[in-house]
Length: 347
Image 1: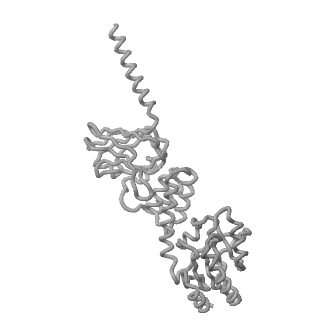
Image 2: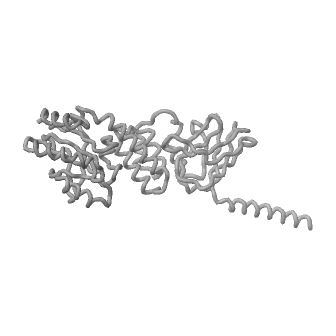
Image 3: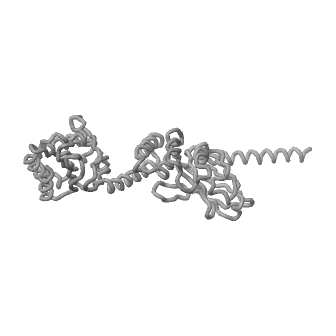
């Protein structure tokens, strides 16, 4: 009887100790069994949008392929389990505490495994299925992005499966969802970089002599909206500048002289300022001081993040684009002498 009591007591202590150990670890545990992974290391990597990998945790697989990886400060994002040359990608919300993955190493890359403990991961896994290589049907991806609550999955699929040239609206929509749901996530910053790279690439393809100029639609200092397309029928010089830019200010008298000389013949200037929020008064003051009397002064006050500047591939100012009467590029950043000659040719 005495030994029976002690046996029960030791059993209860063991159970209590195990439970205390579980509770003591406040991070995330990813465990399971992957057959064929015996004596191999199991890695959990976080995938960034700039094609880099960050190892978040690792462990040795033991008998039968059992493993347990501990992750601290789990962030919402895209992850992968990697064993040898095999890997599988999944999304996590960042709220997961206990995830279990079971399967076989030979079919891991085909998403042929079971996962519990993460709704986000299973949403991603269910949509991908065994289609882990090549492009997915774009309409399926769009339908998924439109309806899913998994923002991380939508982010990854938008950037890897859709064509940004044709689907920039989806790229932008997902960016807004990402910023709203995970404002402090590293993916927000990286997403901005990716969008910037995409826009620069598109700009290199679209900003060519003979191509139609992308639309610009911004407000003036007094809040009036000016669309570039409304100036069709005129020869237009798009001038990217800023009140803080000394070379711009030095160049302004030349633009004023050209405007006075040719405005009656159908020439005008459309000025896009790269001033920033809080500098509205400096912007207006510069317009007045430099006698920039044309009405088309616009800005989103986003400094170098100015949306049209990014779309037009502007990396330094002053930077000008001359458009013909049909709104097509006639000259890109011409010298003063070339600019006047081109204006005369187009009028």
